[in-house]
Length: 234
Image 1: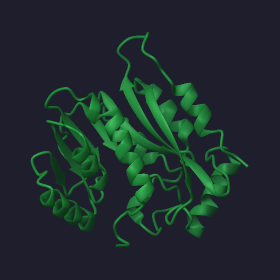
Image 2 (image 1 turned 60 degrees about the horizontal axis):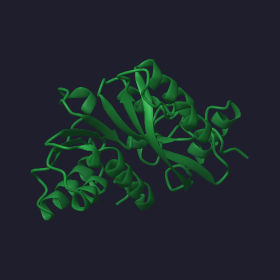
Image 3 (image 1 turned 90 degrees about the vertical axis):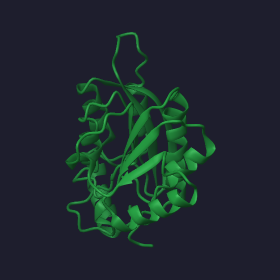
Image 4 (image 1 turned 30 degrees about the horizontal axis):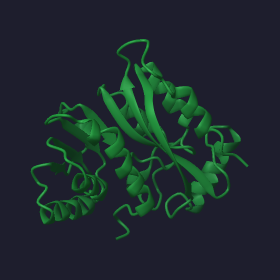
């Protein structure tokens, strides 16, 4: 369905990041909050592969995706572990949780008139990502694109008391949404200004665990992440 985000490679990567950075670290009945659940498949696949005794509260504005997700949740009897709200996290009463997780909208464009407007990440692609880092959750797992001003996100995270605790990187070929002529042209302009980093065909997608700084001795991989995310250029 064209009105529901579909990219199996990206969804599988998001699922792996959820498992490595969140689910496997949860030792008790903890709560995870998810922004932008889509059709729910990444979380559902992760729950089916892992023992997790807590609850994941997802938020999804796309009603078609929300209905599809709930249908699959019911099919696998996961309604006690995965609850998706058909509303916006930013406009809802904040749910307390040990983790905030998201594959946020990161498509940069001059405006939201693109193939799927809900994927619009602002002029530089980092707007929604940075807003999520302002919510104050102790642990935040995000997917970050190298063509969506990754340097600004790393700096924004630092300014809000986060360090990069762990990250994984996946090279991705430009897909259906990022190859739209309007979007690709805009990314080219961002590349000229060293805001976007990619080759003509590929970009990097990083799954990142941001943790609030508890002590100065904590490992911070911010510089390493910045180096990787800005390394892909022609």
